[in-house]
Length: 145
Image 1 (tube, rainbow, N blue to C red):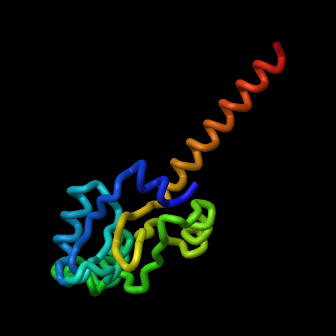
Image 2 (image 1 turned 90 degrees about the vertical axis):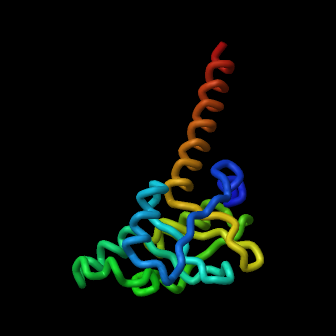
């Protein structure tokens, strides 16, 4: 299975914020869309970074609530790991686990076309295992009759 299969199933909508948006606005966007991270998009639509709830919590632990008026760019991760639609889910899962991050933007020719979370990958793997289990159960039932 590939990233393109996940994007096809879940859709390609990606919520973004600007690097200049303040962290208060970021939190409103995350809450409004019930998401834990978002891509930070530059004015030209390119990926400037990625920012998550964890980034906000860590910044607040260091600096306090005063960060809420700071720009998103002050806490975002600028070195963003991306993937392509052709990336295999096993490879992506390994990269996410090794890198200890939960969201990966999907890019084609420098253009953002989706985002995949570790939850998407896990859900897909569970579905695969359920199909495999059902197939094996069916095979066992028919073989024993």
